[in-house]
Length: 410
Image (cartoon, rainbow, N blue to C red):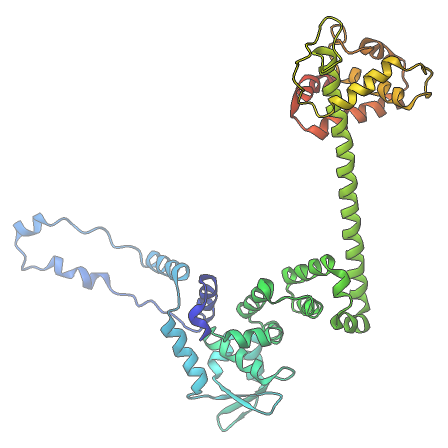
């Protein structure tokens, strides 16, 4: 039987379902009767003096509160109890209710069990007519086997794995219609853990919406968005398209929105990549002008031919740009694309540099003085660029540590 292989979470759910069928009464015992032997007049005085007095008797209200708390927190239903209730259902001993299904079959049950397990069934039983001491109610619209599995769960919280897999959607509907949250949790958990497929996801989504299962509904929508091309060609989608066009429109909009978010994410990643390259270019420029790299070095240093390659990723490309900039004959603004890029890098460096008087990067001080003549619009654009370059690298790297104070002070 499937109940023997259930995990701890399932056992706790079963405990709640079965535990609700019992009314546990704590029998109060008179404490005076228990302790009266210690006040026996036959005990000697010397013996009585050697026995310490018992602690004061706890208050009755306190006892009841603690006992009820421990029972509610640590209650578990043994397998023998579940088997007993399962046997009661299967044998139908003393049944006073018959449930009529679509196939005109009758499932025997007990009024008290059904009334406690489901408030909806309690209302139906109250309104049903009694004939020869037996009540008759109908549960229609689902297969008889699903009704049988549903009623069995009300008794013992037990089910067969094959039956659950076969009738999980019917049981989800029954658990919602007859207000049995423990069964609904079981159905939702099984669907989430592998029984949800591309072929049935649309049917499950519609049931999840109708049965107030928001988490399951979210998982279904996420699956549709992830594999929309295949799911939109299934039979379930075609039926839903005819019966519920509003849901189809909602799902299509979800797919479009997810695609837009994906494109926006890619755009931001590419944008961050560009700012990160600018950050590395600033580091490489500062490194070349201060320490020298390969064949390019500062005016006051002579580089050795055996100098090792540096670790700056943008250094090689920047060396070529610096070499072109120093030898290019086209000096007019906008005349040379490469030179224009170098001018922009030099100006960006000057906005990051907070030591223009001692800085060895060319034209650093010149661009510092030029900032005073720029318009507010140009100044705002440059400040935005500087902020994004620093944000692309976060708080890492010597450039950020060296220049963050300058940016924050502006």
